[in-house]
Image (cartoon, rainbow, N blue to C red; front, side, top):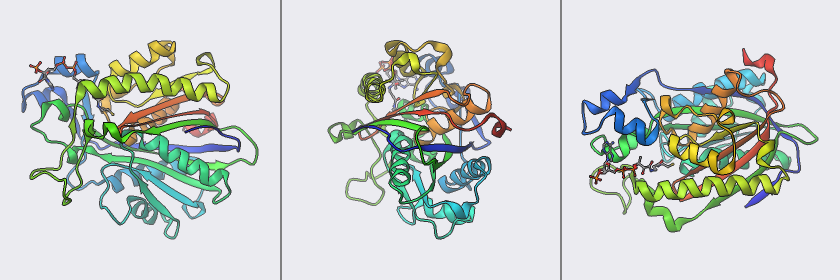
Length: 333
Ligand code: COA
C-alpha cells in the first residue's frame, strides 16, 4: 500500500520512556557465551533497558503518552482514539490501549492494540492518520510500547542480546489543510512468518517452554537491508520527493549495520541519520518514536524538517512514513 497523504494531519507532541535498569553487554557476557566485542561489532548495541518485574507495557506506554500529551497541550479527554502498537501487551485483552487510556484520564476514548511487531508504530501512525483524515476523530494518541525482555529466552545468545524495553508516543491532530504526515508505504508477507516469531501462549502452536522469540538472523538481516531501502524509495517517489529532500532519517533501531547499509544505499549522509540502538537495543514497536523523541529533544530535528521513518520486522512486515516536523521549538523544554 502506497499513499500520498491528501489531508493535513500533524504531530502536536511526542514523548518517550525507558525503564531505569540498564543491562550492559558485559553483564550478558557474564551469564552466557557472548562478549561485548561480538555484540557491538555485529549490531552496534552496547546496552539496553530492562523493565522491572513490576513494570508492564501499559506502564511504559502510559509514561511516554503522558509526556506526549503534555507537550501537545491537550487534555486527555480531548483524545478521540488511542492506538497502541505492541507485540508484548499486558493481556490478550483488555487492550493495552484501554489500560493506558484509563490511566491518562481518557476513560471512554476508544482504544485498541495493533500487532505488527517492529513495524507496529508505522502501521499505527497510518491507522491514526486514516481516522483523523477521514473525520472519524480530530485528535489521536499513537503509542509504541514493549517489554520484549519477557519474550526472550535468556539462554539463547542469538536473540537475547538484541532486544530491549521502552515506549514512545505521539499526539496527532487534523490541521484542516495540508502538511504534517506526507505519505506511507506499508506491506506484510506471511510467507516469511517463520523467520521471526513468538508463538501465542496457551495456543496450539505454543512450545512447551516460553513462548520466546525465535529468529533466522541471516535471513532477517537480508530482508531488512533490502526492504528498508526499497520501501523508503517507494514512499519518497509516491509523494514526489527525493532523498535529497530528506533532512532526518529515523530507521527502526534493530542493528547499526542495517541502518548504515540502508543509509548508504539510499544515499543519505551519516549526519542525517539518527541512531540510538547502542543504548536501547531493538525496542520493536517503540524504537522509532523513542528515536524521534530523542532526536527532537536533542536538537537533531527542527520544525519544517522532512523526516523519513522506516520500520521492518516480524510478519514479515515493513512500513515507511515521510512527515514534515510540525512541533515548534518552544515545546522542546
Ligand atoms: N555471541 C557470540 N556468538 C554468537 C552470538 C552471540 N550473542 N549469537 C550468535 N553467535 C554465533 C553463532 O552461534 C554462530 O556461530 P557458528 O558460526 O559457530 O555457528 C555465529 O555467531 C554467527 O556469526 P555471524 O555469521 O558472524 O553472525 P551474523 O553476522 O549473521 O550476525 C546477527 C548475527 C543476529 C547479528 C545478524 O544476523 C542480524 O543482525 N540479523 C538481523 C536480526 C534482527 O535485526 N532482527 C530483528 C529485526 S526487526
